[in-house]
Image 1 (tube, rainbow, N blue to C red):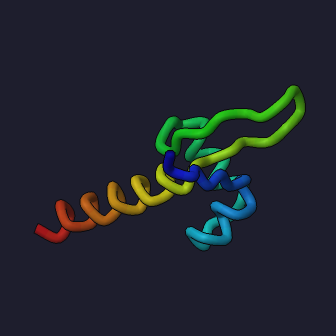
Image 2: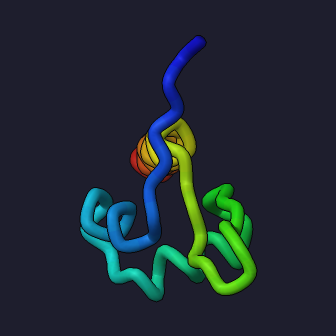
Length: 66
């Protein structure tokens, strides 16, 4: 079974060089899939989802460049 790496919004923000608030906005806008942990816990995002987001952004950039 593949190990799933799960990140909190702060880690995602650091990885993508974005603000934590912008990462939360991406999650609310459903541009980045995430789930909430616990009653008051923050969002959790899998590493696979972060990689998919990066791939989607690269594809968007290629479309604009054409």
